[in-house]
Length: 262
Image (cartoon, rainbow, N blue to C red; front, side, top):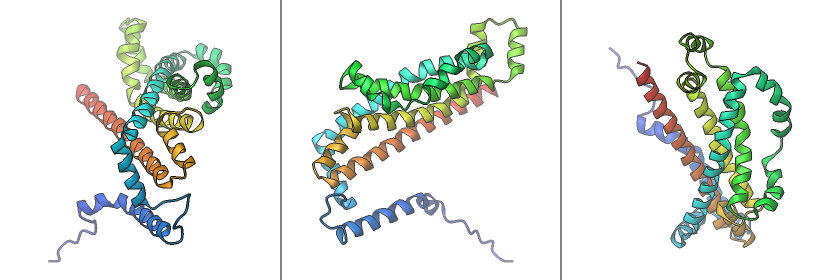
């Protein structure tokens, strides 16, 4: 008998696969920066960026910048998501409301959030309020549109059963509509989290003298490419961690809902 040969790699090697390409890119960048690009004011070796990142950790600037950006992004996401979900649910359940609001939604939704920075600066000045307002505007629209689509996709039979049981509107909403919308709302939440972080960093780069985006700009203007790349790398790490946390929360809620439905 011939032994069965499994072509798949061992589990440990399979886990390392996603890291192959980033490590290769970093290795090539390290080699280029230390040879052809040596002494450049625009690029630095990844090892130098890691040293600069460690320095930012020691002096506390990394923690301060990260806390400000994440705080602004989270607050803006909450202020944009809550009304977005509420209005989107109403529009998804009512064709009359959808028709009445169609022009307003299509008129304001395409406005780029960064275009509101001058207006937000006039209203709130520099600081947290300005950044939060822009993030809230940016996250409001995708949450509204996706919530509207989620409400429309609620099984009509469930709503008919709720009416047959003579459930009031509040009970239909809390016991039928919202539980059915939860899986799709988590998809909207993951998109909203990503948008909130991107917009927050963009506002800091463009106008707000706080947070990770501003720190990266200061490093660039000070001709410190290692520190600039360190902040860029750290922003990517933070984005990955936030997305992973949101995905883990989504899976946990889905698992609990599955246990309840059994």
